[in-house]
Image (cartoon, rainbow, N blue to C red):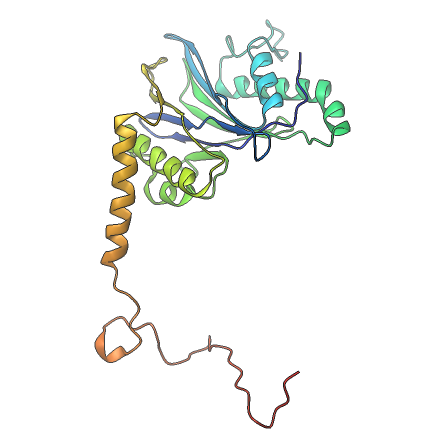
Amino acid sequence: MYANTPHHAMTYCVAIKLNAGLVFLSDSRTNAGLDHISTFRKMIVYEKPDDRFMVLLTAGNLSISQSVREILQTEEIRDPDGGEPITIWNAKSMFDAARVLGSAIRRVYDHDARALRNDDVGFNVSLVFGGQIKGEGMRLFQVYSPGNFIEATDETPYFQIGESKYGKPVLDRVIRPETPLDEAAKCALVSMDSTMKSNLSVGLPLDLVVYEANAYQSDKVVCIDQDNPYYQMMHNSWGQKLREVFDSIEDPVWDDAHTNTPIKMPAGRHAVLKKISTPEEKLI
């Protein structure tokens, strides 16, 4: 049932939790070496209208993440109160649903980890799992390889997995709990575009889901390819506007008589380390 191939999802996924709802975005680039690049979906939506809406994003070893996704739909954990086993479809809270996901990861580990080690492949998977179950507010979790997880807060309203460093700065500057959903979706796409610009292992098509709080379903689910008119506009505008902002900042001026913002100032406690060679010194 489980493939032990060394494919890794060289990916970028981001999920954002706001007062108004949730935004999920993932790419679909996967590579198993420099000469083998494929496309695999890294987002799956679990929806039971008027009851629950959940989204899972995956990064890491492709065989592991696919196995986890397959098992998650039937995985169950024991109800501590003695009721029927808990699944993602009957869990009364997103916390319990995240526990089911953790259990699915551990099942895959128990089945596959030894075989993966024998092939010098580590058990590497990262997931983001979020949504809303009727009776509680929206919740968002980042889940790790051992099956443990942390939850998004107002101070940390988004999670990234995969190639996260290139897309982080714009998220940090824009995203707040009160950010509107459409603005957050735009920010996520700019974050993805910045990542694709700097890392060829992340690429189109993209999967985007926008969920409005207390809706328990969403029709804002779209696959974005290179022909998508909004993405083309955003990609071109972002690059152009960045250049315009860059050009609007004056270059460093070394003569402070000609500027109010000199870059060269009298040495303070951070004096430049400078060694000047004299004729008497021998060069070694």
